[in-house]
Image (cartoon, rainbow, N blue to C red; front, top):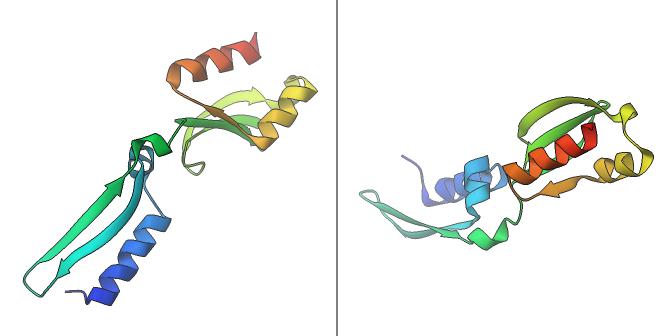
Length: 114
């Protein structure tokens, strides 16, 4: 029930608010290949190499928090307080530390708590 312009606007909004799944899959764009009242054909373009890390570790409200790579969706609140960390690590976490996968993430977290 949408016009071509309305559909295009919806797709633009979708791209601005990508789900974690689409972001991690490397969704780059949508394209309207054909549009008629009977049929709409869309094409998604992906680049899986675009996403180089799955998690992002940073500080929020004095706590170490793990986000998915979209930097919006929380993966885990760690309970690790910023005040218990050395100053250099605190600075790095305030900038944010990208982490490749879950194994690297838990190695990192166990390393800062030991």
